Image (tube, rainbow over all chains, first blue to last red; front, side):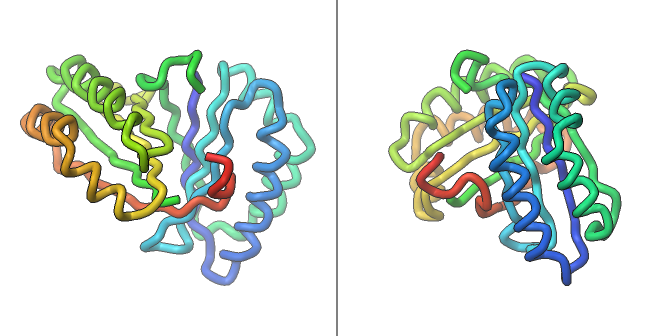
Length: 101
Length: 101
């Protein structure tokens, strides 16, 4: 799989708005055929820190995702909420294997 | 859910050994009743960097996990492979909700 962890830190006044926009984006993203998981999580210790865990079948699906209306709406909505630029780290799965996602 | 991301950087000569030990640990951990996911992933850009994504029902299950033989074996096996101390970050899920893990 082609896994992307998107690390986001928002300004504190936007915590709730970011949560709402990101849940909406995840609800739509998980319906894309090439997306196996689209998890949104919030740090317990630093509530302004979030990670999106996005699991794609291949890199191509990451490009298709960025063409969707829900992604573009999320991107534009959260742009001004960020405390600093978001950071994406790409991973390959070691466990489970591809057939078990 | 009670989600733990364990960030590990290993010395380069231990990359394969760490992968092997961590896959074995994940295969056993995912059978624990309180563990919903136990994913092991490797950075595409920095092959010595790994993340374990551990999804527990509650904090209590994290304590039970640390009492298992497979966890203790993994902990002792990888101890000397680390380039620096590993770092755990705890998260709560925003999406999906608890019943969809």
